[in-house]
Length: 359
Image (cartoon, rainbow, N blue to C red; front, top):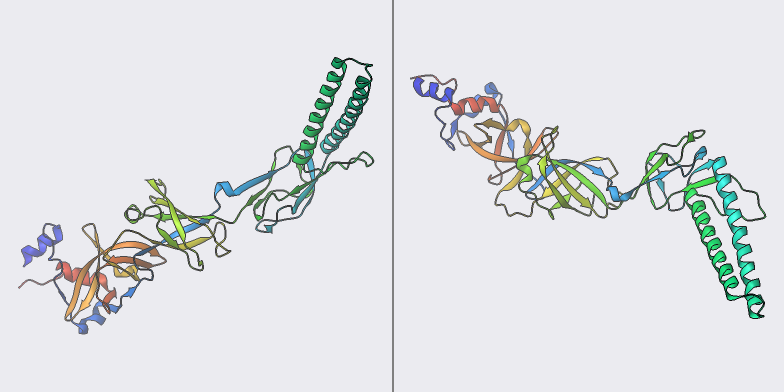
C-alpha cells in the first residue's frame, strides 16, 4: 500500500475514476464537509458569461464646432436623452458674422443676375441684343445661383439660420441633435473658446446595441453566429454576430459579440451585465449552478464530488460560466443529486489516497 501511495503522489498512477470515496457522514463535521442539492441552471445549456453593453460605431455621431467660436450656452449634459432637432449648445463668433455676410452678398448677386436675365430676354425678343449676349447673361445667373446654394449650405453646416436682407447678422450658431439618442460625451463648457472641428458632443442611437461578451477558449468553441443570448431584464433576446478568431492578449479571452436589436431601455450603454449564451449545438448534458468552491482540478480536468451512500463519487464537469463565486457546469447528474460544496480538499485527498495508512 505504501508503494502505491508513493506512485499516486508522484502522479505515476491514476486513481480509479468513478470509484466511491468511502467517507461516513459521521466524519463530515471533522473534515469540514458540507453537501447541498445541485441546482439546474435556467435555460438549459446556456453559459453565463460577463458582458458589457456598447454602442455600435455606426450608431455614434460626433457634433463638432463648425467654425472658431465661443461656447455661449450648453443645454445638455452627459447621459441625457435628446430628440432630433433639440438644441445642444449655442456658439458665438466673428466667423459666423462673415459667413452670414457672404450669404447676403451671394443672395444679392443672385437677385441681380435674375433681373439681368429677365431684361435681356425682353431685349432679345425685341431684336435689340444678339443671342450671345443673352446666353452670357443666363450663364451668369446660373453661376450666381450656384454660389448662393453654396453659401446657404455653409450656413446650414454652421448651424445658422439664413438671415434676411432687412435684419442684421446675429453672429450666433445653434448646434442641434441630428437624431433621437443619448449624450455619450459632453465636452463643451460655457465660456470655452473652440477651434473649427473641435468635438463638442458625442451622441449615440440606442437601438440596436451590442453586447461585448468575454469567453474562454473552451467556452467559445460551442458558440457560433446566430446563437441566442439572454440578458436579465430584457424581454427580447440578442443574437451572436461575431466569434473572434483570436485571443485578447491582456485578458486571454475571446470576444463574442451579440446584437440586441430592440433593447427598449432594458440595458444602458457601457453597463456590465451577465449574458446567458444558449448554444444551438445539440448537447445531451444539462447545465448546473454551484459554488466555485465545489470544484477541484486534477490532471487538467475539473471535478465535483456527488454524495452517494457511504461516501462520494467524483464526476467530471465542463465549466461554461463563472459569476461572482458561482459557476455553471455541464455534466450528467441525476435529479435530486447532492454535491459537496465545502471540504472538497479533504475529499480529494481521500480520493487520491493521501494520508492513507499502510496495512
